[in-house]
Length: 497
Image (cartoon, rainbow, N blue to C red; front, side, top):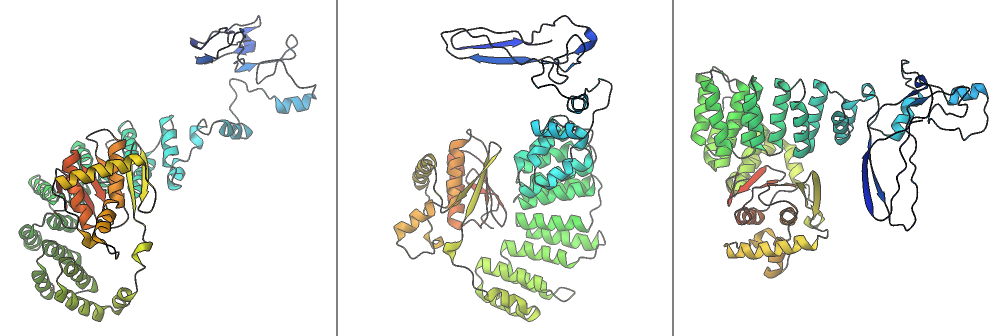
């Protein structure tokens, strides 16, 4: 039999060795052994020497007349009593080297021992992704299970839905080593994924490395810039697109108008809107008119937006007046807000019913923030307890903020408490606590990504701008409205969100 040699030793020691084996005299045809193994053995303190005998490793040993007690599975003397020939045949069925493996109980036993050591042909990677088991699917792929184009597509879509950029990067690395690394559709999905996760730099790297691009590739990249408050870069990319001789279509002008709104480029917005009609011969749809209203509303040109709505060549829809009302509410134009709401209710009475539904008390809202670091997502709630280290870091930051000129804006505290208590309440907003923990748990200069389920308040927005300059990091905060890229004391939204 092939077995490990006995090891002896005393005291605290670590032994590492290659496999050594002895073969008792037997016919070579009765024994086969495969595998190069290494092992690590730690021997505890002991005054007496003990012989440590490992279990024999043998893949196959057939019983015969000379070795009647040899078990066909373990290669050692049988410990059980005498069994009938039929029962022995069932329990100790010998798997010949050239025989195909059965897919019955052998597979189930294999799965029970090690779920990852199964036949690659039996792994349903798409099913695992749809069940949300992305990590398990990646483990199988890392273990040698091949994936087709459909699997990579489902994986990237799953990462985009969960906004998990670290898992997305792992999928990207696997895609680079696959035969589908040049596939246009999969690369477009990667651009969309990075754009959703707020990593425009990674999206641009994928875009620049594409040997061939579709029209959708340009659209997704421009849209990614617009969503992340970098509309100027999106407009530059649109100019590059035209220089390469690519003729824009309806979808192109939609993302271009979004980029103009992000950059508050009113003049360029109207220029592109007119070019769409006059140069490209495209008849604008209601979505294009909404895009122009976004450009005007974002920049605060509310009266011009109202005039533009009245001059539209077709009847305005409830969505148009709802958009105008929202912009009037944001910029504090109460008169325009009332006018827009009056027209909105006339067109769609259900909007008035929705608006009259009382909101739940503010104290019942639980602000949730998640900071992503080291492939983990850590959740913070405004009512939960925090680590002392994060609390100490936050107090230190508050002192630095004061020195840098930060003044708390207590208008964002709606509780009926005194001014000092309001200032203290602002300091412990969940996004600040998430940033404090991220600062103490990640290396310096690392970008922090915070995901917030509520809209960020104006006071925290100002505070995080100053924080980004103090700590010298890029702080990316995603609230329920948009991405905010804080860097060097500035935000990508231009203080509008």
